[in-house]
Length: 382
Ligand SMILES: [Zn+2]
Image 1 (cartoon, rainbow, N blue to C red):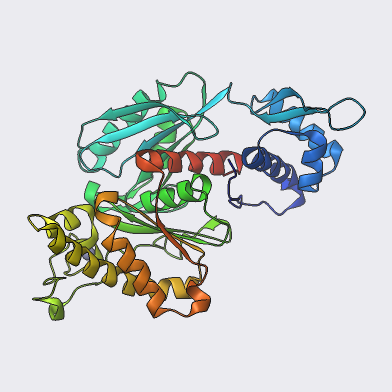
Image 2 (image 1 turned 45 degrees about the vertical axis):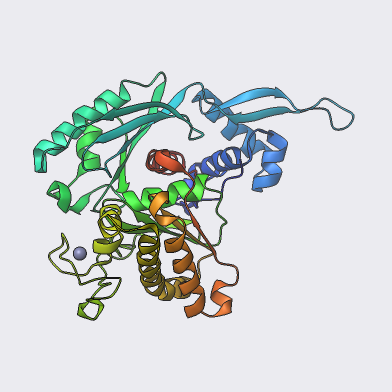
């Protein structure tokens, strides 16, 4: 599988060149699969000596393995291929997007889910919930057959790149250094990111998007977006990039229309995008309607979503717009109206090559995204 290239957090100082060479080589092996050392040198622009030294080090750490000889292309001894090793390390991942259950898994370095752990449990609020989460993470890690490279956690909330939760109101977590607390408890590197950001990482790495910028809209209990621009996740000045679920989308003028009167939102205001577009909001809006009535309503919601996304897509000029959520509700009138409205409201230059589609990663997307956090944070690859 070809993987898009997520920019590592590139160290620029000469003293950090070694770490950069290491992540460049790992990234090539992740994206391209097994190659010879000579091809690695040619592809990365590094010298053969450097490649050999880094590869030897990675082999000794169990991250890379020799995979036998390539098929003979011309006279002479065929070169030995090296590739990512699946034999030594695994990744643990936890998804907190669902309020009513805890989901975790063990993944291979290439992102394959090897084991699932799911418990129907609602976390307690505040510190007790953090302690319960720690115990759940221990049970997930216990499923691993190999050494754990790190644990990635996908959580709702406003979260710094260091895994410090500034706020996750649904869990009553305010200023919780979650990554630090769990790293100490589990004796493992723990990385934490917003669930829309991990969805975007999963889509970028495993969803065959281009390298032209990705806007990933996630529709679940809430609504949020993750953005990958110029090969890196966009965090924003205050770690809240992509928080569009609480943009006002409905006002009094909609009363009596298919959109309906503005409803109260969990944030304390009314008419937020989340009130009509969350999974629950969509279900409530279409409950009891005939197929034709539901289609008309979803079409109206799609037009509204398109009118909200059009200026964002025009501003960022992203190549891919991916919507992740319940296909039964999103596929059809809602997606079509969203795309039609964006195209109607933007210049051809903006939308001519824009690709609008639903996510195809399925239920494991959040776990895969949490795993990409670990690959990116620990190895500089994605
Ligand atoms: Zn709101």
